Image 1 (cartoon, rainbow, N blue to C red):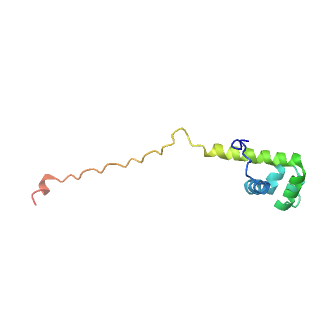
Image 2 (image 1 turned 60 degrees about the vertical axis):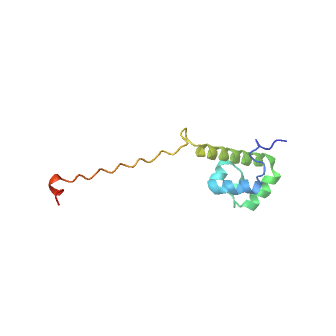
Image 3 (image 1 turned 90 degrees about the vertical axis):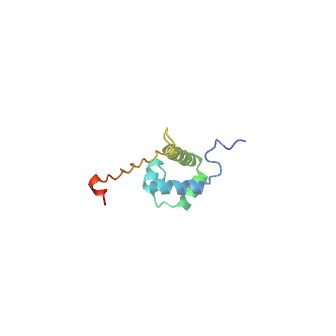
Length: 104
């Protein structure tokens, strides 16, 4: 079985809920996934209990997590020019000493 393409491989449900809560907060999370465990007296413990017993809700939360990861990865993708632009420092101008001062 190939787990390389599964973004949820090795990620626990607790890690998913904690990451989503940190990213969105309970209020916005409750708007994105309309389930009461996110809107009424939310906690990680109560959310885990509900999500483990409710497959459709767990699927929605996992989907939101995968989309959040994908969005985060797109934002971290480097631009077409991965090399940093070199800083060009101005060359110092040579000091010009007037001819009348050279006699000293």
